[in-house]
Length: 353
Image 1: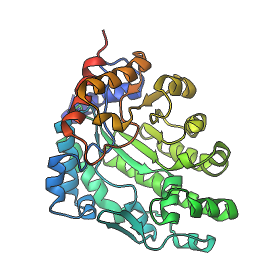
Image 2: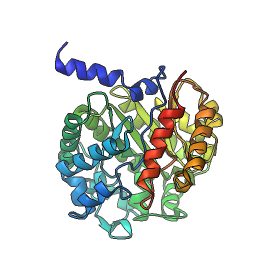
Image 3: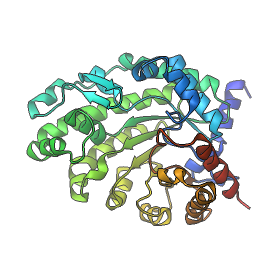
Image 4: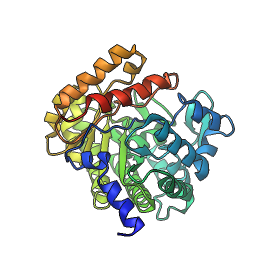
């Protein structure tokens, strides 16, 4: 067996990939959303020298923070250090990250006629820095540690592009969606075409699995999700699944669980707003599940934190296919030692007898 074949076999047999396939594992695997982030001193050391966008667009630095976070925490998978929104830049969106305010879009798509400004990409050359980073990360990671790629789901990206940033009520997004369904479908289709190519190129560059983040879809009622979002999310996931497993992550609304499952994915990512056993039963036990600890739990004292980990593992009931994660990302002021403790607790308490 060649060296390349040996690495491929180790990745295939890794704890994380076994769980993705709902196979037996020695202990519950986990990774943590935003595991490379501002709570880590190692990340802040790099970040102090460059802007956020410079970090995202410098492959060597993106590799460094990705690999360091995985090593420091001892998690079972690395996730590419990148951001959801830079893929929108070459599509025609003027994006800026303001200190203390996060992403701001200076030319939001507020009317149907604005949708014509968003161009579907047929080449990933403008974001080649992402694929360069993936190749560096894959070479630097241990042979048995998978790399997760990711992208924003069409609804979440559309919402950013329309709102111009964060939103509490999504008035602009829903207004365009309700008032001009034709323009909405054109927008979503262009996003699906672009993100599909983006994810497939990430897989080609060296990712073993990809996650689709629908971080904002929880603002929708089930009937709106079914009409305006489901067909597009399903088309995206179906276009990527032949190449690698897809984690379909949606947070903020347990009423959407059955529709999330309809959208597809080999792994269903869920937040803490429904218990893990109920969510898994709703999805069906023929898919893997990822989640679902409330990130705020990490602020708790260690005995309480350990109990909260134990409660989620108990809800999983040792069933093959559970990947432990938070229901959303690590917050910037969290104690790194508590994040590491979560990893240790999961590996200790999740051991199969």
